[in-house]
Image (cartoon, rainbow, N blue to C red; front, side, top):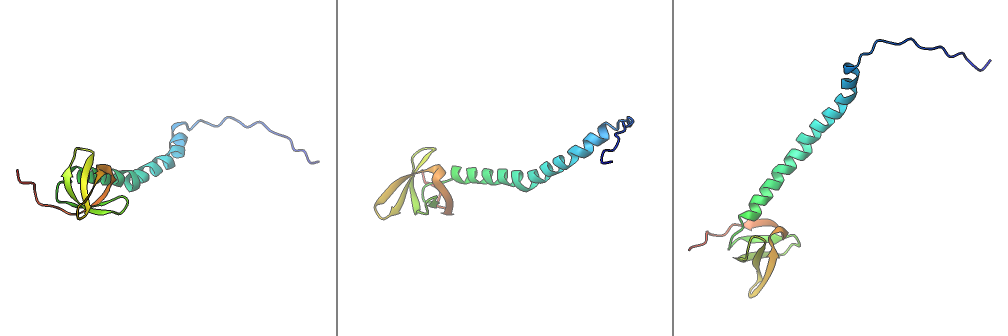
Length: 110
């Protein structure tokens, strides 16, 4: 009364490639959208930041990641800067710790 008979299904012709493509297509579309909305702009932003950090020179006014504003008095090497945060107070800052360059200084006279 509650049990129905199970019938074997006949083998349907295999659609193969079309079914696989239709099941993978949403994932491909999601990846393409993520690439153009997230990955590509982030790469461009990273390149701009690298350029900004590479072009810091003496006389630039910077803001550190901690919010300290100072003027670059000396570029120690590729990784460090000497920054004057108050008159007569100089600190060494890692170049990667700079979050913003506010005012560009004049070119160094040699």
